[in-house]
Each structure stands twice: as structure tokens, then as C-alpha cells.
Amino acid sequence: MDQSTSVHLRESSPDLSVGTRIDLDDVVKQYVIGDTTVTALTDVNLHVDETAFVVVLGPSGSGKTTLLNMIGLLDTPTGGRVALNGRDMTGASRGAQFALRRHTVSFIFQTFNLFPGLTALENVQFGAEVAGRGSAAEVARAELARVGLADRMRHFPHQLSGGEQQRVAIARALATDNPILLADEPTGELDFGTGVQILELLQQQAEAGKTVLVVTHNRELSRVADRVIELSSGRIVSDGPPSGGKCRTADLHW
Image 1 (tube, rainbow, N blue to C red):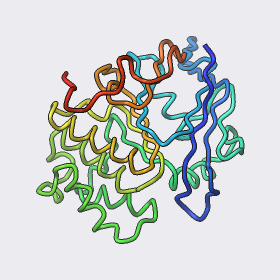
Image 2: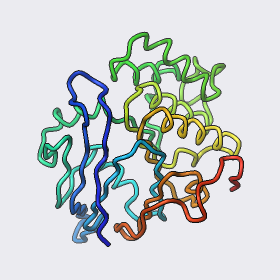
Image 3: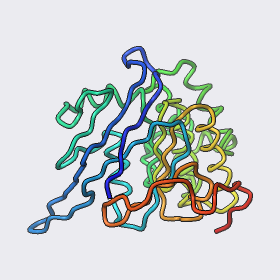
Image 4: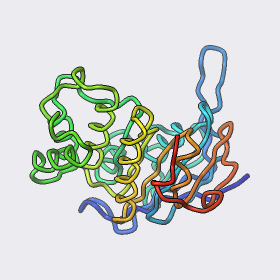
């Protein structure tokens, strides 16, 4: 099924033009493992032009994380086109991709990607500094407090639980204040109560004018989305509002 794709981002840096947009057209992604070719994405055309809370839903191996990496310019397609603000970025240098990405996209990785030699505060401060935010230390403290880690700022990642590390990763992404936020299973390591808290934080980001895309296999999370994009075997099989309508986070259970 062909779906249409583009992500409109608001300006966040003097280096970027108003109306910055990412387009994915007929995107294919294949990986060669020995003598085997694995197709992760097939003919993906996706268009996201609203500031909204979007859930990308699908089982393990459906291509969700690969799709997120394409949108965030962390990976390049085997076929098709990825463009930013009308410029084809498919063959752009890593430096050019990084220069655009650092001011437009923030990531919450499933594997956290924290620096083991930095404290929670320093990890979050690093994110704010890379994005060019002023008063990075103050921003980092505020974001860690928002995710409930005000008393764990001086701890190193190995001193934190998996859920706490996930919250540090989320705080780091929020500290960049970039206009698009990509989250790969952001509640995967969290208990239900903390997971709901994080979902509410992400919803607030969308309400503040950001485009938030959350990748998950948890269908329950899609109930609070403005839009649900479902993948199966590397293809978009449905795209629209959640079945049964959008609900409140208070109505979730898992």
C-alpha cells in the first residue's frame, strides 16, 4: 500500500530555512548478511506534516527502528529518496547530515546510548550543548527533575537502574529542544506509572509544537496518539487515527 511521507519541522537554528521538511519517497532498505539479503523496508512513502503525537506501531522485525533511522538521517536507503527541505540527502556527506540533524532532531534510543564516564547531569548537559542551548547545566537540571531524577543527577549510568537510565536518555532528548523528537520504545524499561509519566511528557512536547514519533510494539500506547502508522514486514499497512478514537493516558493499562 502506498502512503505519502514528509516531516515538517519548524525552524530551530539560523542554519535552517523556515518550513524545513523531510521527505521519504519509495524508500527501500536492505542489509546484506553473508550470503543473505534482508529487506527491512519496502517502498515506504510516508508524509507527516502536522505537529502531533505519532505512534509507529509494529512487532519486532517489522522495520520500525529502521524507519526511525531514515527519518532522523542516521541511515541511508538502499533505494528511494530522503530529502530535507527539498534537498536530496540520500547521498549527502555525514557532516552535512549531522549539521542539519543536530538542530532539528532529538533521539531517545532503546539502548539509551549514555556515556558511561559521565554523570546523569553531564549526559543531559552534553545533549543541550550539542544543540547549542545556553545555560546547558541549568537546562539539564530542569529536565532531569521533570523525569523524576532530581536526586540522581550525580550518579553514573552503572549506578542507575535500567528505568533510570531510560529517563536520563529522555531528559537528554528533551534538553535539546529540537522540533522533532524520535523515540524508540521509550517506555520499554519503565514500570507502568513511570511509563505513563513519560508518555505525558512526550504529549506535552507535541502540544508545544513539536512533531513526536514514538516507535513501539505496545498497541496500548497507540491509543493516546493523534496518528498511528502501522508497519508489517517493512511495509506501511495502515495510517490514521487510533482505532476507537484517542484516549487519555489515565485510561491506559499494560
